[in-house]
Image (cartoon, rainbow, N blue to C red; front, side, top):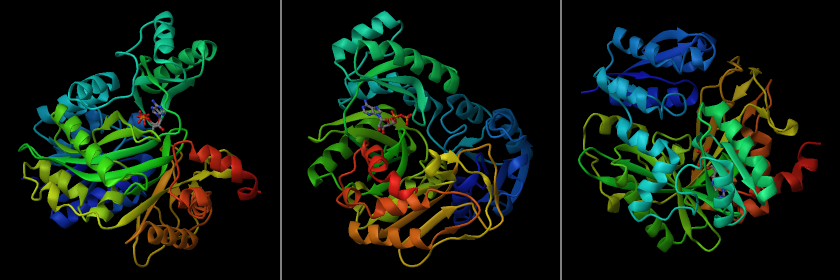
Length: 454
Ligand code: ADP
């Protein structure tokens, strides 16, 4: 039985995990960097151990120090959250060999889905449609150009080890391909220490629609419906909602089945996400699996009433999922806005610093997951997300109106945030009509930047 969990993360997700543990009667150990000594996760966990310096490479990415902390504090399990070591198969393996439960899938599944070209091959063999592209990595420029022509332009060049929207470039012809190929490789090498890339057909104006999976160790795999994450800037999600305004019941059923098949092909256990791109005609293509809890999981929690983090812990504990696919009801609509400490008027430059006044919205149908508070100093070393606002109601219209209202109440003084941008999107007719594709943000900023930021 899991009695104590080390949380190998920081920020709002560390807090989210503390909350689930409290409700389950499980003790928590926070680990933190020197810069995070004032952090809420450190204050709210039962115990806390400092594991190193400010940079993540000196702290949150140090598997050795995290495992030492786990041994010193005698924990039974480690929850990796998202980012940092959450999709590191070696770390999962180290936990397994130290007899500490890794709250996530087996290292084998992480490895299989972590290499994007192996992942595509695995799910294709299981009969799930994938985006047309190269058969695995491309080795030389000459070979790559040949394949790009065969796929047909535009093509997207993607890092095998990619994540967070980095190491991705689009080419429209041979000339731009020659340039972008090298840029993509360079970016991938810098970001992931692995410059290997592969090619895909670039789907124009698709929607990003993903399915939340839960799978236990007893052979049960379920999906908790979809999230539409089409509102993205530079391939990074800004707004997520469920259900997707685009899916018909028929397409939802088909994609849900495909998501379960993809997950089973990876022999997946625990919570995971199958990501698809969907074109205007409703053709859908697998792009990747995220083998961890995702930032946007609360949207699904509010629609289904299922606590995904608790499920993760119970699954890691060897328990069976107590419900079946037919028991899951999708009766609400939920929208999440990512609140980033960024200045949208200065090309989204990070805006770390001390928050003067912090006041989070409340009321019916409003959830805020955040580690921010009045007087909190946002360190410049980590990502800029400081909170998530999730608003829900019986209909999409209710969720939209509530989001607009809550965004108008949210006060964060002393730093710049994406709150005004979100408010403008909630009032934008294209978004309100449910027509946003992954091309939406660029269009929106082009149409409105002059008014918004003047
Ligand atoms: P990452 O792991 O870096 O997040 P993904 O493969 O999940 O990368 O893709 C992130 C986003 O990039 C997608 O949501 C989509 O907007 C865009 N994208 C990825 N592949 C394609 C493609 N083949 N065609 C069009 N857009 C794509």
